[in-house]
Length: 344
Image 1 (cartoon, helix red, strand yellow):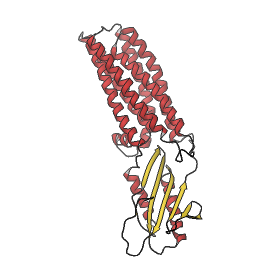
Image 2 (spheres, rainbow, N blue to C red; image 1 turned 60 degrees about the vertical axis):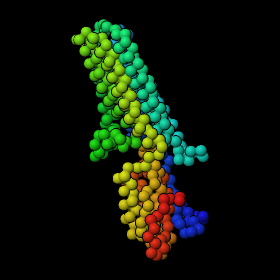
Image 3 (tube, one colour; image 1 turned 90 degrees about the vertical axis):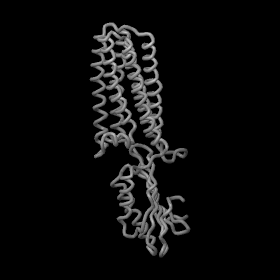
Image 4 (cartoon, rainbow, N blue to C red; image 1 turned 45 degrees about the vertical axis):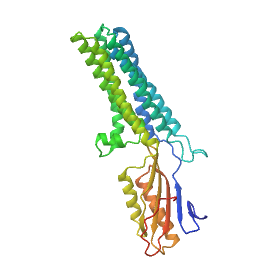
């Protein structure tokens, strides 16, 4: 290879490769990562206060459901700290060992959070519920439980409102569940899922306590604890699935890939392009490799100019695409072979 212009390399076979990295990423006050941290801080603050109150209520009344809820809030507090750690580590700059940066740190720590929700939150809650099913305990001073659960619902609702505000801003026109499935920001969708599960758990705990009193069946309190554990296990399974697809290198959504192809097709000298190869390295950091075939006889200077225009339009429309690699080649007359993926 020999250099042809800044950011461009020309191979011996005439292929032009444009490799442009975006400017070093820094989280501005209004950036996506800054907003994600606000969501996590709000969740931690609420969970600390709620966990203390729930454990106090469980100690005073002997309720298994209340104890499960206390465990749930304590686990959520620790999970928030791990999400903050992931956000911090993901901002470290690229180095020789990690040339594409450390963006996937966030996905790794989010996966650890999901495992903890399943093992500690769901497992211990279900275990405590089973113990109370086998050895039921009559709840005393249940009024304290209702008061604490009511306060917990207020705190959890406030935390969920903060997370939903960020999530709603990012989801666009998609339906809620579709946006959750396609979300690339685990700091936000994890808090939304956990807080939603927390509110549902509060409802189950209150129902279990009330039914155990009204029907004089203390085992119903243990049954509510088991249901809370199963609920947390279901939420954790969803989070594991979400984090797994991001951690193994998920591409951008098909709509965005189609838009990238359309941008390249706007250049009249481009004959055809391969399906863009993309990968998420973070909620707002995408790698793009694009193979473009140009009409035979197109001068090298025009190819370089067209590639630079494509790159600029992509950055303007999709600022999250931080690294762009475009491999451009001329097509021999009569050649109808589709372009190979970049690097093949």
